[in-house]
Image (cartoon, rainbow, N blue to C red; front, side):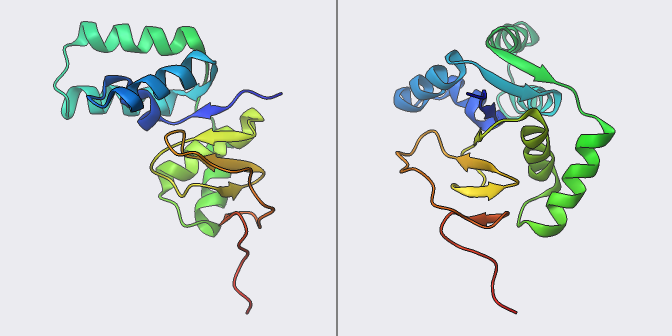
Length: 152
């Protein structure tokens, strides 16, 4: 079974004042997974800019994530795949790059709270770890499960 890819918003919920979400984020990360350098960069940016965290606390968070997860680099291949995904899916380019790296990693699931839950992108199902979700129905690439591209 492949490891899931974990988006930055799930990691940031480790710092949440909502104990149920913090606990769920800890469980998801504790099971192991995959993140990219982009995910780590986004975590650092939010921790510094929005949360005003000191560097020592950020470094401790990053160390915990890197200890639990495999970290993948950003590559020209992931960039090119992100461009392809962004052209056909309703995602920001940065979210498309997260999806591209998840696809290239071989992950079957991408845990993310802020992308469209149950969307399937190149065989990777985007799931919200904070919502109880039923197994996905078949879907067209880039469209929510159970939906397909509009007829032309």
